[in-house]
Image 1 (cartoon, helix red, strand yellow):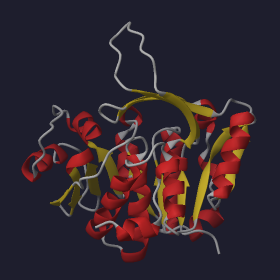
Image 2 (cartoon, helix red, strand yellow):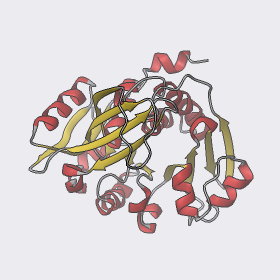
Image 3 (tube, helix red, strand yellow):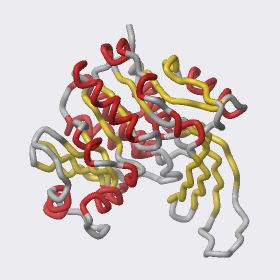
Image 4 (tube, one colour):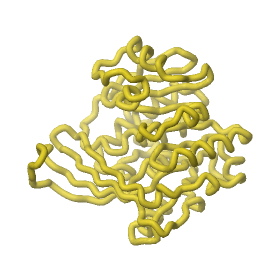
Amino acid sequence: MSPEITVFGSINMDLVVYSAIEPQKGETVIGTSFETFQGGKGANQAVAISRLGVPVSLVGKVGNDVFGNELLDILRKEAIDVSGVQESSEDSGTAFITVFEETSQNQIIVISGANAFVKSDQVTKQTLASSKILIAQLETPSGETEKLFKRSKEFDCYRILNTAPVHNLSNSLMNESDLLIMNETELATLSGDSLSRQFTSQGLNKSLEKIPLTNKQSVIVTLGSQGVYVYENKTGTLISGLDVATVDTTGSGDCFVGALATQYLVHGNLVDAAYFANKAAALSVTKKGASASMPSLEEVVNLI
């Protein structure tokens, strides 16, 4: 039986530098360490889903190069269906990431490479027919995602769009999405409001009301250590953040998206799914790396 969750998105090799401090412009500092990890929002989300015990298909592109071969090997070892991943003559996507250990925050520059050539027709009718949930982000061509979301209507897929990076988001693609998952920075960009660090239900509602949404659409705003806001049927639920020892926040948003999809698939309740995903994302920041930090189902269930 084909997986009931399909992820359409990016696959990168993450090149990660860890530094005790953040350098000023023009300043050189000595880093702590360097590591490589499998990354890319699409791949990260697929790994999160698979590690939580739910079969998942990943559709995307990698280069016909050393990174591409390594990325496919890693994904197969994660028990992900990669039959929809194609090889490209372009280089594999890469992400250059600096993690500042003092704050556990990061800076990321992504080189799209093969991800810029992902096509919606890589997702077959058979895949759409078996998929109850379809997930996409904006590290692959947004026009192809919009085509895919339109095609998936006749198959009654629940379409989740992770609005990152937000500058590629069109109103037409937004309209084709059933659920939008964004962070506080993306909310500020879409609403035109200033970025706030103190979040209230009233303030979040005001910002969300400035985004053109239909009554059938839902939004989840991830708020980092402050938690998650679920906006459904014009009503909001604020879920508090969890107190954990943060090591590396890279991929925590992707962990949230994947974990939420697994629970929504089973229960169909967005608030309950967000509670679960909030726990999974909190666990992910306690480890280094993006995909490498994704927790197991047992770890999430046992987190008090």
